[in-house]
Length: 320
Ligand SMILES: O=P(O)(O)O[C@@H]1[C@@H](OP(=O)(O)O)[C@H](OP(=O)(O)O)[C@H](O)[C@H](OP(=O)(O)O)[C@H]1OP(=O)(O)O
Ligand SMILES: Nc1ncnc2c1ncn2[C@@H]1O[C@H](COP(=O)(O)OP(=O)(O)O)[C@@H](O)[C@H]1O
Ligand SMILES: [Mg+2]
Ligand SMILES: [Mg+2]
Image (cartoon, rainbow, N blue to C red):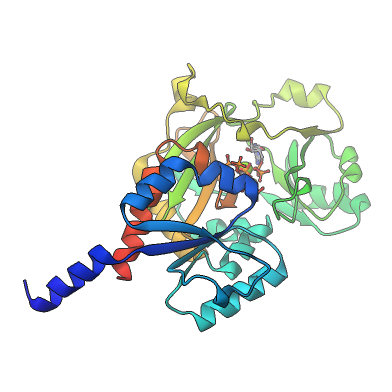
């Protein structure tokens, strides 16, 4: 080994890395748990809270800034910090995250991806954006040829409780009751189970979660109106330990998930996110991506502590 590489090795062994974080108290509680802090500490990584009331450049020094905060002011602070501190890795760039804060732009890259026939078809349910004027919705839906039932989702996805208030609309006339701006998406029957694909850099983990049950033709004939539905898939109880119909439970093929994760990381410019994927009921390989979340609930993902420690270590090796 050359003296130079011995020096680099010693430097790496001695160096401590600091991850500054700007997270809600809820996120700190669910994510920064003692096991993660312990595993990271053993590798020389420490976590330091960022005080949002003080200039960022007076704090640290940081090697990595981990954040999930919304708002234009915070975005500007971070963008400026990135320019003046190019060696600090901001996870992830605020402009890239902003892309996910609108349910139309969120799925645009999936639509552009062209992943047809690669271990399955992957797409986005047909959808229509309604910016204003609820009274025009029935006509617009008819013109676009969207099939009922429809899932109505607030267009803005800013993490507020309101942005997660979704409804299922069974008939065209009742669509006037909805409050734009929103996205109207065709409901795709998927056997009541969805796949949450968590991405942490290059690592992937997939879990099953409960979802909305299928809507039958009879349901459609016997129901009218618009119904708000609860956050079915967020429940901590996963659908992984339950006896399910194997055709519903079968996970999407690994090569497909790898390809999807890689492409989306590149296209979105993000390293920390998850995808909600459903498989159309009665098909083996028709998949739809219905939601993409920035820095989601990793705390519910088994083994996330090791996955994040490895992720931070790999970032350090890239930036010794
Ligand atoms: O609170 P958690 O742990 O359920 O995580 C939420 C995510 O749940 P999941 O990872 O799918 O289980 C949740 O995912 P869904 O949108 O429910 O699919 C969101 O990512 C949510 O963030 P935000 O409210 O959209 O900013 C996430 O909320 P935050 O923790 O980021 O506030
Ligand atoms: N197009 C769809 N077809 C079938 N079910 C859907 C569709 N879109 C959403 N859902 C159901 O609604 C839930 C919430 O929708 P999602 O787009 O993931 O919003 P959120 O960001 O609030 O999680 C999903 O987890 C799934 O159960
Ligand atoms: Mg979701
Ligand atoms: Mg979401």
